[in-house]
Image (cartoon, rainbow, N blue to C red; front, side):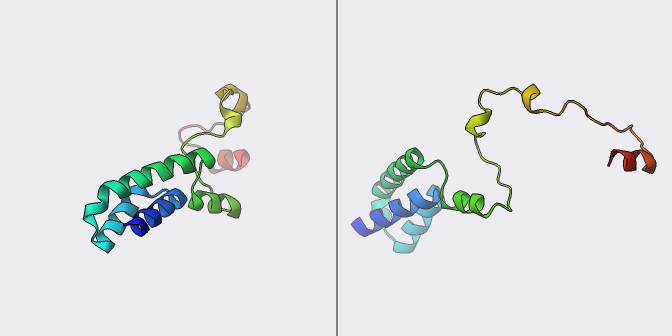
Length: 108
């Protein structure tokens, strides 16, 4: 029991895939009697992991690579106190409803 709860909570804290992890571990071991202990352990490990580091292993690896664009749940802290007008581009180029090829080429 302790090995099941410990392994599940460790993986839950690392990968942040709580529901699927619990289902896989309970189904794989047949330990349905330990579901409440596993649920509690994964819940606590996720809370502790979120306090220590906001993203899981997969999100951190995606950020390290740099060539994959990953949309986070929350905006970066630098954007918390900014307005849209601070970020947006002011000199927009627009096209008509049915632009000609020449109009599109001049915008590009």
